[in-house]
Image (cartoon, rainbow, N blue to C red; front, side, top):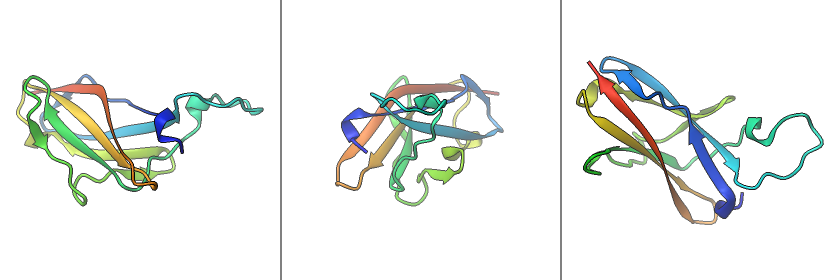
Length: 124
């Protein structure tokens, strides 16, 4: 994969309950998709991020790191539908806005941090 032309997007809900365990999906796709003779749109094609992909959670107001990157505990998982991670909301303070960052380390050794403003709020 060409790291310069790689994008991620996700389906983060705007709000979560403070007792919820959210399964947050992360999807990868080419920034400039190639034409294909199939009927599938390039966005619908599942592209997997590298196995060395991690997430971090920041306070959106102060950019303070709440959950730092970790090689074990914040590793992004994978299934046939794409990449995902489970986030326990009970460890986060309610009525705050949080931001998710995704860091991918590619096979060529390059590291890309995707900061696409994935924000969410915790409600009581």
